[in-house]
Structure formats: structure tokens, C-alpha cells
Image (cartoon, rainbow, N blue to C red; front, side, top):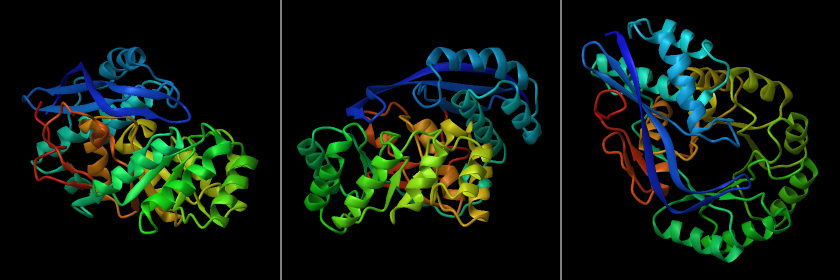
Length: 355
């Protein structure tokens, strides 16, 4: 099975409500899809999310990276030469991690399809079911409380609360949400780099003193400020999750060596796909660091690839794969089943799509 072509298409899906974080506001997913074609008619599918404020990529840059660098590097290669394909994919262009991720997951899709096996089984088959959280966008406090209560009514037991846009209000946001949803709902707080290190310690300590019982705080400070991450981790009792600070295996090593976080959030759009994500997960596991699997604003294509990866890894202990759930209507059919907080793997070969 040899790669003959890579074709690009657009993937769009409106969101139920605008997605708001400390970094951006989005009302519609506008991503790049890929189809990797082979000489025997099989097609591998992938998706890239242009998230300029995090990965530095746009739709145009993703298309350029794939057509001008990745496609020439791997066309003509046999899918069974898997490691060689990944070597070329990840070294033909610097960074451009979302572009690489789209092609990476399509190659994994093809490899599993060749052996007529679901991808999660090819990768390790640790579980068949995942429980995801759902994101509560940063808005006025009353709106966030309403959104949180509605999410609980829909059956979600884990809420990921976006903060960091107005640090002075963030403690009150979490306190009111906790009062509204009760003590049995898990709360995760994501600052999206919105605080300084001193602000983070002050806010987190206030949340601890208020008895809000949050599970973790994600990326409290700027992604480059590893000293600040280290300071926050050392001066609070709450677990700290590194997200934007970890793109590569080397980034994971730095975070672990510095004790700059308690957990690591793996996202395929940051790692360049499953190949590098596995390395990060195994480095973390070897050092006793649990991981979350997360996503950007993505449709069912790439979120399903992430779900297959998560279902194969014991060390993925937290799941934040709510992209398809946030869509008013996801244009993609097939793949794992997304039913509110539950993601259930299918037995279809590969990732589970036949576009």
C-alpha cells in the first residue's frame, strides 16, 4: 500500500455557543481536512485546526506546509515503512505541528485499515470507553453559572471552567459555579496563560481557602514562563496541568525536570500527531506524571484520532475531548460514538471513517 497523493478539503461546523477563552473567541470551526490516498484505493483521513494564538498556524500556512513540504516528502512511500514515513513527516519542515498532525493521523488510519483493525487496538487497546469533560467558556459570571448547571443537567460530571480574562473576578466565578452545581461535580480550571505567577498563587490559594475543591488548574501562566509554572506548582496545594508549555517530548522532559507541573495535557495539534504524543505520554508515565488528552476546536475527525490514542494508553487519566459536543451540528459521520460525556470506540477499521 503506497501513498500516491494527499488531497485537502475544508471542514466547517457551527458551535452551539461562542467558544471564549483568555486567548480568543470563536463561533465556528473552520479547519483543514486531509485525505491520504494509496495505490490500492484505501484513504486515510486527518484534520488540522488552525490555532494561530497557540501553534502559530493559519489555514493558509497549513495548506502550504502539507502541499509544499509534507506531500513531496512522503509520496511514494509504503505504509509498512511506518517509522520511515514518520521520520520524513516530522523532519521535512520545522514546527507546523497541526499540519503534521493531520497527515500523521491519516497515516495511522491507513496502517490500521490495512490490517482491518480499529486504531485503538493497533495502539494498545487499554479501554473502549472514555469520559470527557465539557468546556464552560469565560463569560459574565451569571452566564457561566447557567451554562454549568445546564451541562450538569445534560449529564456531564466534569466541567472545565475557562478563566484568565478578568483575573479579579476568577475566584468569584469558581465559587458561584461550585455553589450552583454542588460538591459532587469535578471542576477543572483553565487559565489559558491568563495570569502572572503571583496572581496565580494568590487566586489558587483563595480557591483552596474557599473550599472549592478544584481538581486542577491548567496553564496558569505564559507558556514560556517555566520558572513561573515552577513557582505556582511549588506554592499551591492544587495540581497544576501544563498545556501550552508542552509541544514536544523535550518540552515534557523540561517540565518534569523542573517540577513545573503535576500533570501534562497532550494535544495532537501541539505534538504533530500520535507519533510524538506517544513519546510524551511514555516519558510522563516513566516519571510518574499522569496525562490528559485534550483538543483544540476540532471536529469528529481529529478528536476521534485523539480518542483512539487515549483509549490505548493507561497513563491518559483525564479526557478533554469535547470538540464534537460543542458543535451545533458536526458534519462528520462514523468513528467513535460521542454521547454527552461518554465516548465509545467502534470496531470499524482505522479511525472509523470512510469519507
